[in-house]
Image (cartoon, rainbow, N blue to C red):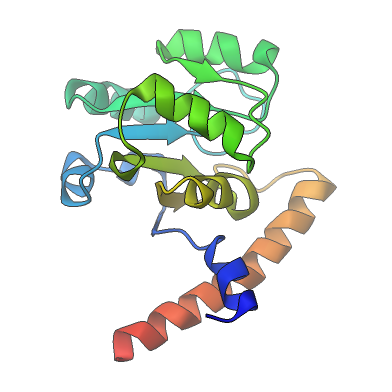
Length: 177
């Protein structure tokens, strides 16, 4: 595989869904997944929002009842993540330095599952998806809750759109074969 192809493939998600709430029990069973590593901002809620949408709360409750182990993994500080995670009754890893492996490896250990049974879920390919892929996790890219973001995130989103266009073209070619 060409170097560029390998570099880009680390950014490609295994699945793209509209929201975290689209991850159903059946989807998880189909892919042999028993654990989820969840991003916070623009995945479970809007950026820096301490509240969670009622649909997300219901989804978390259903996945918990299904026996799915879940943990929050965030690049945010403990001051941001801890009250959010405690309100959801989920363990967390803050200051994760995604896409580095360290935070993911800590989350994997805390879930107590093999990487092949865990999905990393987030809204950014350069952090959530790249980090999950580097650790051998199934990766799920969701659309961000809110697109009213700071200039740095808007630049990353523009680059992300370019990568995802290549990803979609590659998927289309693979389906033709």
